[in-house]
Image 1: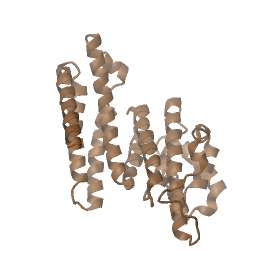
Image 2: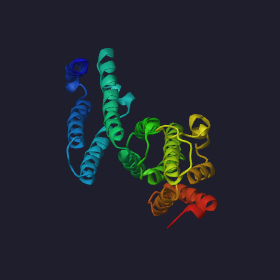
Image 3: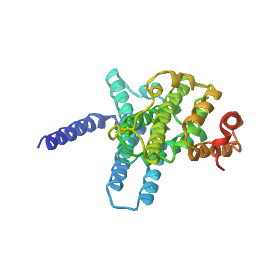
Image 4: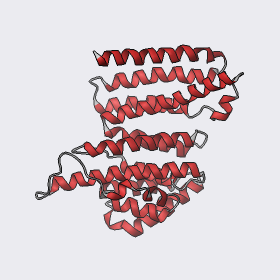
Amino acid sequence: MTSKIQKAITGLQCLRSIVKWHRLEHIATSLWDVYSGLFGDQAMILAVNSSFVDPSLQFESQLKIIESSFKKVFSIPSLEKVRQMGNSEDDKEDIENLYQNILNMYEDTLLILVSKDLYKLQILKDMAMWMNEDSSYLQERAIVVISRVLSFASRKVRGYTSVDAPCLGVLAAELSLLCCHNDVSITQQASLGMHHLLCIAKCQNEDIEKTKSTKYEKHGNHCLLSPSCDTEFVPKVLQRDRAKIAQSVGQTLMPSLLTDFVWSLLMTLSSPNCVTAFKASTILKLTLEYHAHKVTM
């Protein structure tokens, strides 16, 4: 009964917000279009998520919708420009709230997907690729979402007996490039995201070691993270320090994932963006210098 009441309250709050913001349809049309479009996208994504569809087809269809949503959400103007659409302070405040709710709705959709299946962290890899391919998107906002979802996942895996996240190598490659971004705010968020990714990888490694080992002390059903995952040192070290990025990634990722990391950087060398290609070549060179013995091509 309590859950039904909570759902009803949530529904009423959502309806209240829609009614409140509906008047913005004529003030900030582009923003309202994105918001209403996201409702439809989220409904389709969650409907597919709860259906008995083949997992690969399910992911494929969800990714297409996520990409469409990504282009809508991160193509809207910056908050400063959006606020200028308001004619009064009340309008500006409502527009800002609508703007934030658009970002929250996109993030919430990702959190729901990842909470049910860590495999869908792969969506973050695609988001990072879309960011690196087109700098016109609101990159700072997008990397914040990626970092938050990885933070959520790194906390969640502590209670998992097994971790299935095969995309970590490719995602780490994309984040490594963003860790070397010229924009400090993007660099900070990317390094924080990389920190959470490495914590997930550590848990994944420990799960594999537990499976292989016949003699180990049983610690319940939890993956135990090393103390370094709980410090602020790692994210700061990873900011624009390509040597530290290469060392940390190489030490943490298992050989198959490190191979994915190296292969992804290798493919980036053909990027038409010379700056991106140079960053990739530097990180690749350092990674192979430190950890070539772990790479299995």
